[in-house]
Image (cartoon, rainbow, N blue to C red):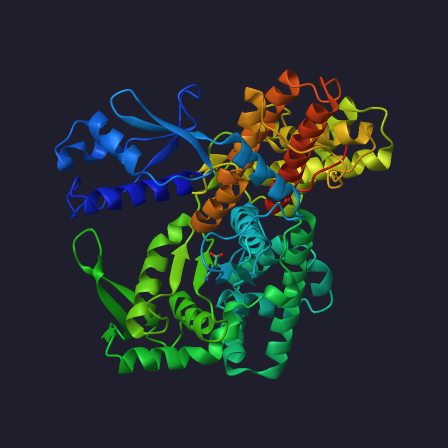
Length: 581
Ligand code: ARG
């Protein structure tokens, strides 16, 4: 609706320019907001106030002219002027109802992209395989997954890329340790965190071991077969750990999405050679670097992007350049989204700029670093175990499930044990995911079990419960939310119905916003507000005790669309809904 109104206003501006009322050299950015006072309109724009000065007119006079020039549209019932010159729009209830009917008639709720469909690479999760997945990987994994799902729902082609760190010097240490402990290595690898710690300890305490570790790095790079085999075994075990976490989290990543750093090894000499022939390379202290004007440190000295070390080794940046070229040339992407910690912002600005300058990607390729802040402990300090270690994701999820199970047991002592367990697990996992997704991704946040497991506020339990409330209406009637053909049509009469309906109609715009900005919290807020409006509607507009059959049917349709929107919205966030809890 806001887009539509902006378009209508833009048309009106063009008309007034043609009529000589407005100067032709203005290009206003048109803002349309939800009106604060619904008695005066559903939407409002301050356009007349913004343009009054360049037009040399009083805001209210200009508003009048704009309204006269506004093309008619069936979605708009009426337009008026309020206050110093706001233009207020009333939405047409019949048109709104027809939009909602169209959503109801489609299993996917009629959502679609408001831009041409794209091929989008989503680079997310991407842990380093040398260590066990820990809490630091949670944000990338679940925020990236939610955005990937939203893009897909809108009709874009999504290519998931799990750019795991499966290469680098720390592998020498791990391989040397695997050799030394050949008998129990398999068993010890069950606990990767500990395995890494032991290997590091050996490395630090024994010069002999450290030398062997360094030799293994050389062997690995030379492609020595027994060393490669060991490396492959290590990675496959580590990837198995990751996949187990993805499966538990309900994250839509599979082994087929893994394309780790090592996949680009063969391309790296070519990347450096191409940078050289493009005249972009400078040697500095033996290393091959690209210096770009726009990157300077605090003292104003140029910052290099190092692509090859003095010893010949390649770097994180070199691999990312190769990956960008692959994503453009092989995957034919129009857009690549990187869900990676904000602290890597400079890295991405630099490699994006180098890739463009070197022509590794075309000018119209959209490269976007979707950075995120840090997840801290409940006390706001870095998230650590009691003895100061990193918290394993698997342990965190165990605790979430146990806590949730205790809560749902208290609430529903009558439910059978196996159902309680599956509810507990859905609520526990859902709570961890929702708590993260509902925060703006660029802010830091404190991980707090008590808050995220509360049944009040913008939490997973509240949202999941809101869905079950709608589901229970239909269960009582022994009806599904999808079979509505025998019901009378939807009509928006009472204010609570119109408010609910207007919000429901914004689902598509919300998803498009999330797809554009990579911000799942906007969908969380939308769903939370939806649940709130449904509550008011449910209190003020009895469904089963409606005045007439037609009224009851219309309200049932609204309830069905609410239930289905909640379910689809939560599913797009990667959260499973329950029919009862
Ligand atoms: N493995 C990296 C890390 O753990 C993240 C990789 C992100 N993706 C990328 N294309 N650089 O920090």
